[in-house]
Length: 459
Image (cartoon, rainbow, N blue to C red):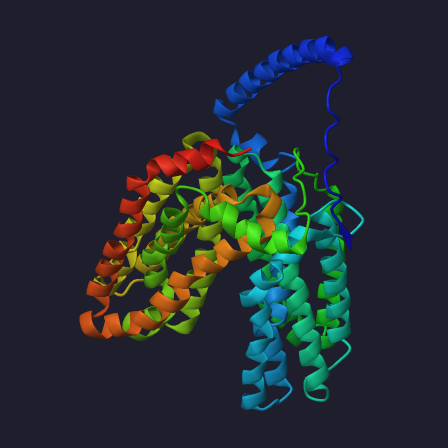
């Protein structure tokens, strides 16, 4: 890996060049002023959705998001299904859940991605291509083994694939933060979500069907490895950031400076609390939604699978795409506020299901609206995380911020939802989720100038 070359100090001006320098400075100032005015005018002009999503910086994110999402199920649910079919013991299958630990701990080696870069394709794309090739090789190797006969080697390969996948995510999140202009962040987040969700369908549900009906498990994993190699071509197509950032000069700087830089901002603490609170109501409503629909509302697993998974996924994608397009017109603060209010109100759809008649159409409407609004909120939220990252340390900062965003879902919504449901019942609980969303919206309104400052500081 190639560390960054420190910047060369400027040579002091000599008396003989003073006049020339002054003239040049005047010309440069005039040119810069004109360029800044032009840029400001462009930034305030709404961009058509068709141009937004076909931009050379945004469009590749669909394939790159697909590459990011493809390995997840292959080291998770799909691998567990393969082990189950091969009659692996329940205890050993339980240990396979530890394979995905790399996704949780990826912030630990994110500074290495900021500090070092492979000697090809630039600072971020070099890492992405390297990890995509290693992922493809790992998937091909997994296809050569069987959990029934070679569980330990297969599990170790799965750990390797999960590590490479988490590292690819670090580089991809940093690349997306670096390359997008501020009015493209919502659209970039939306296309990334679309690619990621499609990949999870392919490596999850579709892979199970192919393995069971047509190809067998080994050939299915090999096919996924070939697909990863194909998608890796998008990393060659994707452009470099318009303004490349200087790489940290040492590993120490790459580890410590992201924290110093971030906490040196006046809005740092407020924004960190907002990251935890913004989607908290949504997290509580969704924590046990499948259990609610089957056990309390009385729908069959087939009905819930069709509506909650298929329609819910489609609604999330549509919401993310719509949110990305609207963000280019509304700006960051107004988008966060509008989509946050819609997220909160949409939880009433689950309340309506809990008190209304047993109707698949009612369930479809409630689930569809909730996922539609959640997708819009996700687009704005990811755009906020991108806007918070300093380009020099975007790998480390995005990894840390995204880990923080999971705190509410993992440590609050997950453990507390069962107790709240037992105390209040399902109808009152879903009304409570609307109230849980309000502190985040209040904080967003109170510190709206901070959000405007973050938005204005975008590329």
